[in-house]
Image 1 (cartoon, chains in turn purple, brown, blue, red):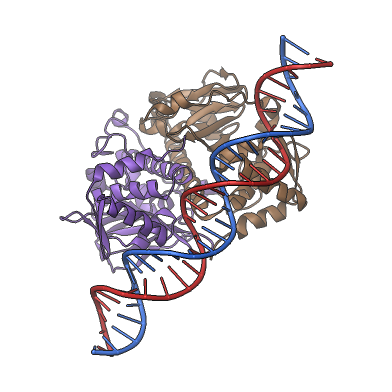
Image 2 (cartoon, rainbow over the protein chains, first blue to last red):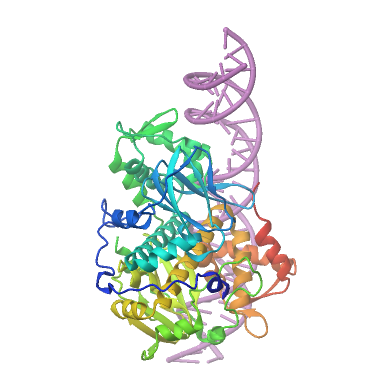
Length: 253
Length: 253
DNA sequence: GGGGCTGTGTAACGCCCTTCACAGACCGCG
DNA sequence: CGCGGTCTGTGAAGGGCGTTACACAGCCCC
């Protein structure tokens, strides 16, 4: 327990002189919906720019790993362009996709902040342009700029809320509701201009901790009910309201 | 959405009178294994004292709620004596126990830090002595004492790691492995001098997101294999190694 | 054009777990 | 000392979902 502290740069002396601003601005947290949690690891855009100001752009190819679960952690990444998949693996190698991060998301913040091994694996789904800071640089900038420390705390809280919600979903809801939730989210984030969500059914299974077959069955059921359209490599939401209803109404009382 | 509160089981006449020795905090960190995450929301003891210095002791009776999911959040609590259960509820009212916090644990830190509604419900299992700070006081003290902000960041990271792990467990493992994990943990934290873990099988079910019947069946199987002993209101681990083995080996490759 | 390769559709089978139902054990309390 | 309430034990029934096993349709590339 004391070891984290040993690993924490002794140079950190966060100066919260601008205390008045704490917690006043959370407008960026959930612009789209008031009751939903932010699903992406994002901070206020201006804070993002401030955090990574002066960083050189790094290019990664599709399929390249940023880091792997259990790795020693020492960098925090910011996404400028591209999509990065965050996933965790079971001892047996089964994959569970936790999230897909987009432009202006932060990646690897936990490991960078507490210096312990990576809790997840990050892999570029597309060609990516990233910026990054070392642990030392991160703390240096947080110290120089107290509002950054505040932003990081808010980010950590938001992620905690999101993961806790996922845990509850996993425990309480069946595949159908979890799938509906994911689709509603993905539809708002990675759908193209025509509304198509480019994701395979296998990948959806990895999101849910379920099999492709189960996903397929559910999806075909919805298609027959005119809720979604399906094509190879993707799907499109037709009746978003019905989906939301499925996501919300599948409780067990 | 606020119906949880209405549906909140009023049946919680927990007979935790016998839980007196939970507070004997032997295990700050998992003494058993180094790679395991801290399960309790604790910061460095000296930081804890610093954070709450000068706070008046508040007494709560067993069964009393500190706060309820969806409540507006404005306080952070520190446990001086007693045990507090942290749980989340499904829309249908089903309960999932996230954790049980002991002496020197922090409670409600997320809501206090980001000012958004409570993500969980906190209820005193025993008579408790707590200290607490308002959101304003919390930030005031963090500002005056930067090391506190650092400690809070570490705490948030630790909890994120823990919850992520739980999410993975929930997705990857069956009841047997999850139950074994919990028992190994509980055995190190709340066992009495004779090694008895005072917890009912129903409560174990709430920990796992499973039914009492499933827990009962698994437990009886283990008893027949000399791994544990069972008595009313509790159980004792006989073969800890076998339990750990079950907890670890139930992967799916 | 013909092999892979990946993504989709579908069905049979079976296990794990929940649900329901009930009975006995133990406990505190009037 | 009996009575209600909680905890435990057990079994039948049912379903959700994983497992396995194919069939087929696009797509890439030699």
